[in-house]
Image (cartoon, rainbow, N blue to C red):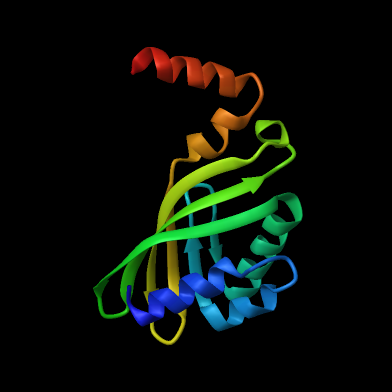
Length: 140
C-alpha cells in the first residue's frame, strides 16, 4: 500500500461525529465526492454530508482490505463497512463491501465510491428486502 493511501485509510477509519474537522486534512477545498446515491462538491458540503451520515447511523466501522496505487496521485482502496441504522435491517448491523477511487495531490480532490446500492438499501428495507432476497435466490 502506498504511504499516502495507508495514511488516508487510517485517518478515514478514525472519523466519527466528533472528528469531522479532520476532513480538512484529508480532502481539498474543491473535493468532488460521489457514490451510487450522492454527489457532493466542496469541503463544506462534504462535511455536512458526513455530519448527517454520523447523526443517522451508529457503530460505523470501516475496515480497509487493500489498496492499489495505479498511477502517481491515483489509487483504489478496498473496504468493508459495518454500521447500524434504525431504518435498515430493523436496526441490526449492515455489512457492505466496496472500493474507493481516489485522486490526490497533497489531499484528495476526487473520491468516487463503488458499492452495491441494492445490498445497502433495498435488501435491508422491511418487506422490500424480503422480496429482493427471494428474487435473488430464485435467479441464482
